[in-house]
Length: 167
Image (cartoon, rainbow, N blue to C red):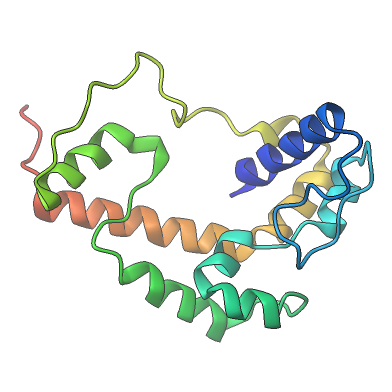
């Protein structure tokens, strides 16, 4: 979740540089636009906290409750929606996820590129000043819990559906 926010920050920076005349570049009209050349701290002031949790709560919730903090009941509703999916994938394990999709839905995966976009790597947040890392962690607290649950669901689905790797 932290890396996703950092990626969004860099994406908005690139858009602002590429399209300086654009009136609006934020990912949702419900939320404020970051100022041009915003620092990460300024970006976090306007970027919605726990974006993935909010997305799983649905468009109506997002529109009606954009400024409300996420609480335990909203988080549980997001978890319930996540659990309703037939397959939950995580980008760091894309090859296994594609195998899972193939088994569940009778699909044949196309060959993957040599380097995957979603490969796991060190967090971009590790080089940030400590106070910014703490701000980022607070901004993604529910998303981090949701992501941990998604990873557990993925591992459970893999264990139930795919054959164990040969040893």
